[in-house]
Length: 282
Ligand SMILES: C[S@@+](CC[C@H](N)C(=O)[O-])C[C@H]1O[C@@H](n2cnc3c(N)ncnc32)[C@H](O)[C@@H]1O
Image (cartoon, rainbow, N blue to C red; front, side, top):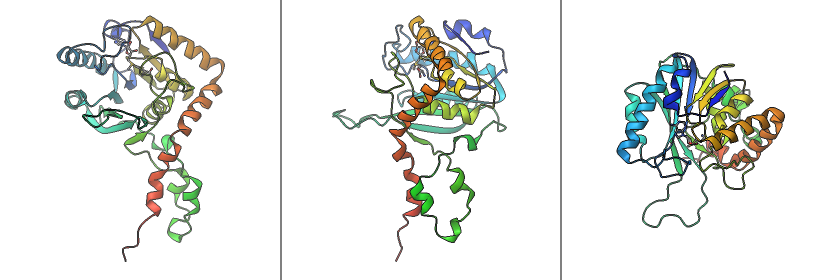
């Protein structure tokens, strides 16, 4: 399909067939008062939850029986929304996205909030999940450390480890190479991880709240199809320009994404080092 409608998802939802989507991947307004050129993030708590339940009910029938659903939220409303979704789907993970916010200033009357809560849900136990496509390679130091015979030839050391449910990836800051003119653009790296793991080759990904079209770019870069909505016409134009830019020069996006992921590579390789630094109990 590869289409993004400049329309309210609740008005346009009938354009998508029931049972046709492999992966719904979405990053809706969080109700934190952001300005998206509309009031979608400025509702009262009650209105926000009512609206959220409405769009969830509208999009879920589009998901295939072996499909998956990822939703970005913040701690303020994830408890209510996760409970609502758990009555309809099976919850597989809560992924914590640590945005790698630098320690400067911050709250003085509470702990500074530096994470988003991502819910990963499925429709049935028979869900698609390609772990090998998202393994994280071990660093050279760890590989060298496998001199003990029990590690020699171990497949997992060669193919990398599976990502944990804590994802430490820098947010898109003002000077980031990927940056578009949007207040809550998500890093391509983490959207790509979801798309690779939870959508088969040439499968269909649906994002009801496209923003700058990060989901569409992740699909183009990984042989998946996409469909989505974005209500704001300026953001819709950003998406169209971004897709055009990608189609003209896909390697530019790979380079940008690589630069972004270099910011956090050190952190990502730490868990495997812990494995080797066992302390001697004596
Ligand atoms: C959190 S942002 C998505 C950011 C996106 N993940 C990215 O990486 O750029 C949410 C988007 O939903 C859009 N939106 C809000 N209400 C909508 C609606 N009813 N239908 C379609 N889009 C809507 C907003 O304009 C905003 O751009």
